[in-house]
Amino acid sequence: MKFVLAPLAGFTNAAFRTMCRLGGADLTYTEMVSAAGLAHGSIATRRLMEVLDGERDVVCQLFGSKPDEISVATREISETKRFVGIDLNAGCPMPKVVKEGAGAALVKSPQLIYDCLKAMKDATDLPITLKTRPGPKPDQVKLFEILDAAEKAGVSGITLHARFTSQAHGGDVHLDLLSELVSRSKVPITGNGSVVDGESALKMAQTGVDTIMIGRAALNNPLIFNDLKNETQTDLTREKRLELFSMHVDLLLKQHEMLVAKYPDYTTSADDLVSCIFRTHLFRYFSGVRGSSEIRRRMNDIHTVKEVLELKNVLKEN
Picture 1 (cartoon, one colour):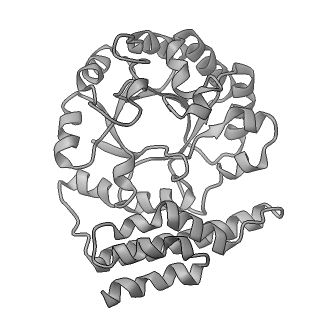
Picture 2 (cartoon, rainbow, N blue to C red):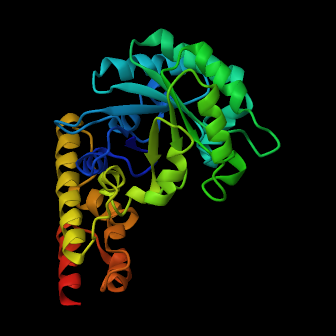
C-alpha cells in the first residue's frame, strides 16, 4: 500500500512536503494552485509551485472552472518540468473556492469536470488525475457520473475524499461508496478521509484502494507515513518533537532563500515567514507535551526566527 500527502491549502509548501517525504510519503501535492491566477500572470500563484532542490515526486494540484484558463495553466505547470503529474481539485469546500464555481462546486456538473480534465489532457503529456467527493450531499450522489466523465477524459487516477460536500471535513467517511468506486473504476483509486492511525488505515485499505492519502494527521506527525507502512508507532518524545521542529525550521529557511533568489520582488522576510508558519503549523509539534501551554501563550508575541527557535528552551525548562 502506498501512502501520500494530501494537498492542504496553507500547509503543503516545499518545506512541509520535504518533511513528509522524509517521513515516508510516496508522493506529495502542492497547495491548490489557481488556474485563473496562472492564466493572468500572478506571481504569488507561481510561488506556490516552487520546489526545493532535490525535491521529487510532487504533483501540482490545480483548481478552476474555466477550461480555457485551465488549459493555459496546465501548459505553464507542465513547462516547469518540476512535477510528475497535475491534479484537478473538484472537492475543496472552502466558500471562496466554491464561489468561483471551482473545487467542490464542480461535483454538481460531471460534464464540466470532463471539460476541465479534457482541457488538461490536451495541454500536457503529464498524467492527469482528479480529486473529488461523492456529491453535494447524501441525497445527491454524483460519484459514478463523475467516474464516467473522468475515465472518458483519460485520467490516470482518481482520489475520493469520501465525504459529501455538505460534510466539509467532518462526519462519517463513506467507505461503502469508496469500495463501490473501486469496483467500478478502470483506473487506480486513492482513498482520503480521516485516516489517522493503523486501524483507520486498515478499514480504508479493505475497500480495495491502491493508495491512501493522509491530510491533517500529518500536520503534527510527518512520520505517520512510515508508521502506517511498517505498522509501527513512532514514540514522539519531547526530544523527537524538538528534532522535527528544528528540521522544519531549517527547511523553511531554505525555502525562503530559494524564493528570494528566484523572485527579486519577494519582500517577505525570513522572520515573517517562519513566525507566521509557526502560528499556523509549527506549534503543532508541541501538542500535548509539558510546556505546550506556555508556548501557546507566547504565540502572538513571536515575530522572529530567533524567538521561534528559543521556544525549545521552554520545553527543556518544563
